[in-house]
Amino acid sequence: MENENSQNEYFLKREAKEKETHAKESKKKMKKLLVWAVVLVVAGLGFWTAKLPKFQASDTPEVKGEFFPAQGREHIATGATHPDYSSDPPTGGWHYDTTAQAGIYDKELPDEQLIHNLEHGHVWLSYRPDLDPAVIDKLAEIAKSYGSKIIMAPRSKNTSPIALASWEYLLKLESFDQLQVEGFIKAHRDKGPEKIPAMGEPGFKDFREGK
Image (cartoon, rainbow, N blue to C red; front, side, top):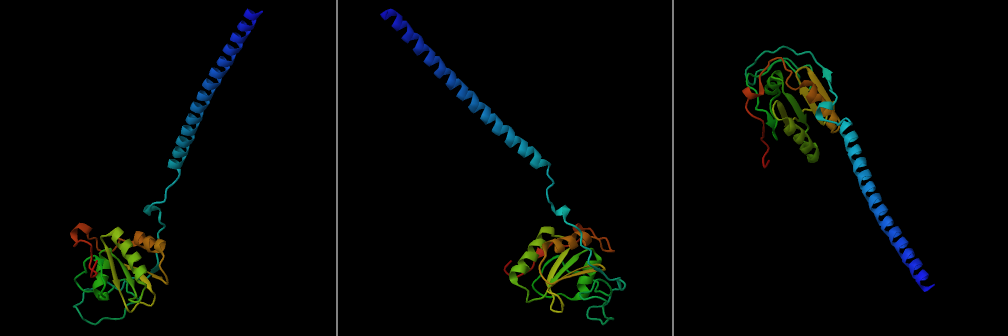
């Protein structure tokens, strides 16, 4: 009887150990399956995220602005008088024979000089001198991001806080709007009637004091 009890106890212990071993192995398998499931989910999300369209500068919609037919392309002597321009700021017409170097200025430049820049395909970002300095810095960052064929300068005669001009096109803004600014640059930069490669012009610079 005692021997029989010992055998039963042995088999019970063996059965319990087998169940414990089986439970541990099942737990390990479940952990592995869970890890692989997480890996597959992450990989799947990464794949589909990569497939989603990403917004880039090239996706910025073009902004044409208002059209003003150019009043000729005549060169005039510095300081010479001429008829009134059809837009303010001007977008074409009588101009000096020397352009301004592309860049950011903290002083006003003559309209007649910058019209020549527009003829070369530059975009002119002008602003009233009393514009919030933080907004001026935002405009400057945009100007720097494009570099060549951008002129930025204050203009006290502006009737709006911000005005963007290119050859024959003008956009006036009552407040800063990055999409509008970049959309106008995209639509008109390097599209003037006189095709001058950027490499043929002096490089872009920030001419502001302390910058």
